[in-house]
Each structure stands twice: as C-alpha cells, then as structure tokens.
Length: 272
Image (cartoon, rainbow, N blue to C red; front, side):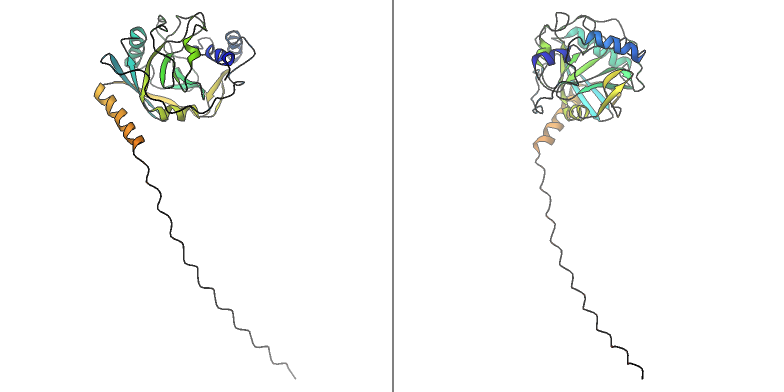
C-alpha cells in the first residue's frame, strides 16, 4: 500500500454525518472528502497482518470495556492516563447505551474496521458535541489499537471509532486537517473477532461503501472490571498457547469380498 493510497484511506475515517440522508447527497459529500485519484477500492491489500503483541503497556490507569458483537466479544483496554478526553467520551457513550444495536458500517481488510455510528438500517444515531483530538498522546495506530473516527476537522470526533486491522503509521501523521488520528486504547482479547469482521464481504448501502453485506452488530457494550478483562485476556492467551491435538487417522477399511459370479444358466432344450 503506497503512502499516497494510505493517506487517502485515512481521510475517509470520518463520521459520515451528511451521508445518511440521501444516496445522492452521500455521493457529493464523499467526493469532497475523497479528493484525489485513489479510493479504498483501488488500494491493493498488503500482506496479511501478523499476530501482534499488545501495543500499550498495562498500567493502573486503565478502563476496560467489552463490545459484545454478533461475531463474538472484543475486550478493550482504554488508556485513561494518555487519552483522558477520548476515554471519558467513549465510556460515557458505553454507559448510555449509545453503541447497543449499532453496526460495524465500514470494513476495509488490512486497514481498519469502523463502527459506533449507524444502525443496521443505515440510520445515523444522534451524538453529543465533538471532542478535542488527542493525537499527540504518544499512542500509535498499530494493529489492534482503537482510535476515534472524525471528519477532516481534527476536533470533530463524536461517537464513531475504528480498530486498526494492521499497523497504520500514516494515521499518526498530520495528514488530515493538520492532525493525525487519536488512539485511546487497544484490544486485549478478541482480535480474532476483529479479523473475522475484516473478512466480511462488503457492499454499498445508502451511498456508503465498504458496508458489510451481513450485519455485524454490537449487541451490547459494557464497562468491565479489570479482573474480568484480564480473565478474558488470559483465556485467549491460554487458547493460543494450547497446541491443537492432531486428528486421529482413520483406519483403512477392509475391502469387501467380491460377489461370486452368477452360475451360467442352462440353455433351454430345443423343441422338436
């Protein structure tokens, strides 16, 4: 993936606030935000992302959230110390039930999966006022991190977020509105669920591209205790560390005894 292509893709991590009204209006809004010759459809996927270790070191300054999705659970560790505004905003939406019933509406493999703003019908949910961009907090857009989605206005993030499916260092640069994209946490369990979401086939819905054909719904978002989050993370680590037992070979079947050939019939006695 070229720097130019990734830059254009990054410019599309937006809240789509004007796109849910009409497909025609969506096309116009998209053309404005996507100025340039390349689009996500044009971008060539990079090599499959490697299984990475957690990016943000665990500290006492963490908040934990689980996104219960129709694909499985995604457990998030949110860095309150380095991204206090983004974490407080996200947790407030979690506690208010904002994310319940929303879908991952924008999925681009080997880039990111985005959600938190639309219902399965394509209706956009109302949000609180936007927040300040914390992109200079030292956290990077690496595989498995969660960041705030926004328009080209650096301080326009509200409820929508995205989870990086691969390392996206270009998103840490001032490539959109003079700023990067603010990371505020990471996946500590359920990255296989993110991979499954990224593998979904997509279509265009209400003028919005990269919308999964089969809905991937956040059925419930909840704040977790640290103990519950660590249990989920430990269980995932143990599952990965346990080798899969080889399948028992199937014993060869005994060939069946061939049937005896039929006795020849006696020809009829000719009549005189």
